[in-house]
Image 1: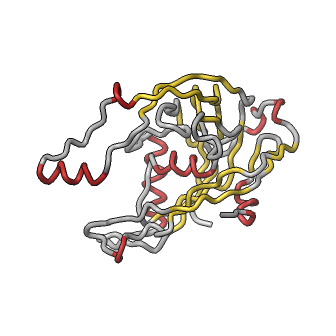
Image 2: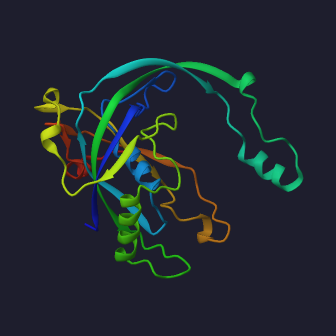
Image 3: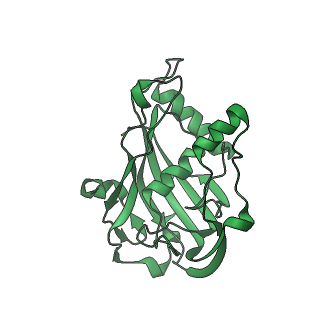
Length: 240
């Protein structure tokens, strides 16, 4: 295991969407490791790093709320963006008035999580050739202490930003809600999306960096014991 960190993450709302319910968004009861990986990558990430979530702690009672949201049902074509950058045609834009779609969502409210994670080196080196664990550890540590991020960390969806991310030495497990005591079988949950290219561009061409978007869903079946999900314990049970 590489260098490790413990953070506390809070927010007013969160949505960790169940893939089997795509039309109307329905959140899992607890975060997926993949969602927490994405949150951490918003703070600091390099191709040389692989973020690994070891533990997730749920502190607040699990509360759901139903809302309706306006969403855009289309997306801008990447090929159109490239063509517009080259010759100005066609126009790479979406008019929300013409593409709007209202959907219901069942999301989480008033969430507080503890996330224990570490990083491992992937073996992909930058042009500076100085990819040491100590270097990345110190950068991540500094950014966590200062509350820095290069994009807004979110809780599952971009509409639900984090309120606070705090670096801690130990998790205050005595603050776990009494409602979460005991052993809860969470069933099969999405672990993360595993991209088939392994983060390496096509033909190993790091100049143009064309990555594949093909990915497989990886699932696992964890138990939450007294609010604690020992993610590392269940990794061996992951299934595509």
